[in-house]
Length: 284
Ligand SMILES: [Zn+2]
Image (cartoon, rainbow, N blue to C red):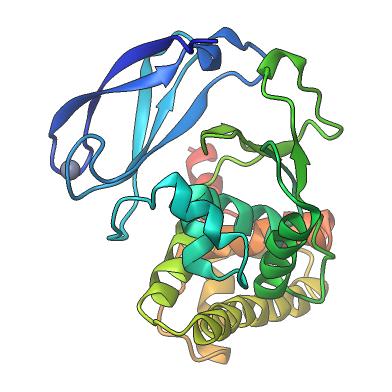
């Protein structure tokens, strides 16, 4: 069966180069997932940059998100299949799912979301390798990572997810649905730092270190929250910077810590963090 495609005009969000890419029409025919994120690899619109484009079901561009990591074009499909044999590492995972696919998978594992990947003819061994690799790098004492499930159905209108509040990546690495709103800048930084190292085992150690640093901040925040009725985000940041000797904690980082606490530890604790600016604005 011939796949009909639709031409979409894109502008690189980094260098403003313009080009047209082709997207399978069936993405727009589905209604249940709404807007989708397409991973645009380097070479597709301009030679150097890769990014995410948000498309609605009419095919209109709703926004772009840059990915600040330099990487060559993805490996050809034949090469990609050889990967399934050896021991899985970070670079291979990126080759298989794209950078943004990997950020999304790491995010879903670490924050305890369900995740589904549409893919045909995948061996049990390979499924286990993917899950084990991601479990290993996101391991923590607060949640048990949920198993990524694989769906062989390629007709989007026939897909029913057991958990609808989940990540869904299709066979072409388009992100059909994410259960979160936030940008994946934490995961982007994890991967970026790890890719500066060549040794796959050292890459894992580095990611685990960053995850553990984040967990230390989570731990600290939980202890503070247990002892107060409520606390301003700015006060929390001040004491965290002082006690943990961290030079700068931004609001984005604190929001991520709060999200983690609310999803994996306690919603009540997370709700104790008050936004100072918002309170000030609403009192005007
Ligand atoms: Zn560009």
